[in-house]
Image (cartoon, rainbow, N blue to C red; front, side, top):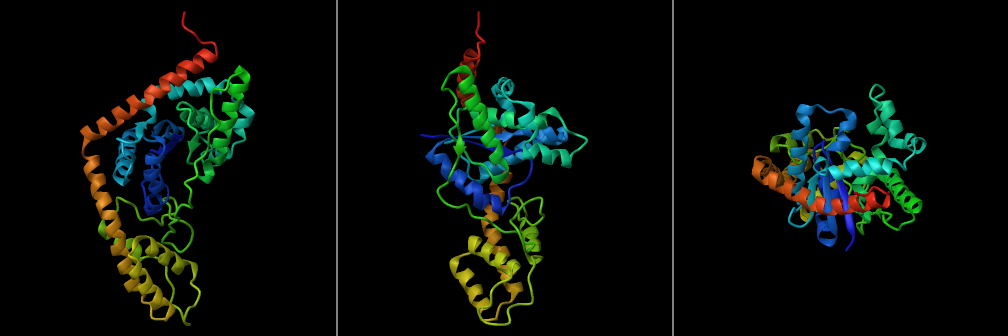
Length: 329
C-alpha cells in the first residue's frame, strides 16, 4: 500500500470549493492508502501570525477537516509541531540544500514581494521543511496544488541528493498523487474564477444559513437571455455549475430549461440555490461546532495521531542519523 502525506493549512476556512474538490478526494484516499494528514503550524510561523490566534486557528482547521470526513480511526492526523522529529530532519536535510536553489523558488520570490520587511530564514528554507514533512514518513505520493509542484520537485531533488551522497537507496522519490479523475472545480459567486478565500467569493462550511442566503442573492447575474438556447455568460454559467454540484438533478434541469426557453428568473434560481447549499453545509457546520466544543475528543485525536506519526518518524530519523554518521557511543 502506498504511503501518502498531505499538509493542511492552519489558517483559512474551508469553503464549498475545498469540500467538493480536494476534501472529497482525501476522504476517499484515506481508505485506499496509508495516509498521514498534518496541520502545518510550523509553516505558518514564516508570516509571524498572532500567537494569541495560532492555537485557535489550528483548532478550527482540525475541527473542520474532521467534520468534513477525515477519520482518525483510518488515517493518521497530527499537528506538525507535535512531531519534533520533522524539525530535526529539516536541519539534517538543510546540509544538502543550497542557498542558490532555495532563493530561486517561486514561493520565496513571491513572499519577498508580499512581505519585504519580513524576509526570514524560515521563508528561504520552507522547501526544506516541506521535504522533511514528506520524507519523515518516506511518503511515495503527495497531493499538491499547482503552487506546490516546484516544492515537490525539490523534495525529490533533496532525496536523490541524499541517496547519492551517502551511497544508499533510502529515500523514495515522491510523486504527485493522482486521484484518478479530475477534481471538481467550484466557481465563485463573483462571476469569474474559482471559489476562494482571498477572492472574497466563497461560501464557507461555517457560514450560517442567513449568511449563505445573503451571499448567494448578491451573486452576479445579467438581464437574462434574449434568444432560446443562448450561450451563457461566465457569471451565469458559474451559477449553473454550482447548482449542478449542490442541487438535485431535477432542480438543475428545471432552471436550465427555464434559461433555454428565456423564462429564467434569477431571483427564484438564487433562492433555490441558497437552500440547496444550506442543505449541504448545515449538517457539516453542526458537526464542526460539536467537534470544536469537545476539547477531550480533539486532545485524543491529536495525541493518538502524534503517537502513530512518531512511530514512523523515530525509525526514519534513527536511520538517517546513522547513514550520516551520527551514532551513539
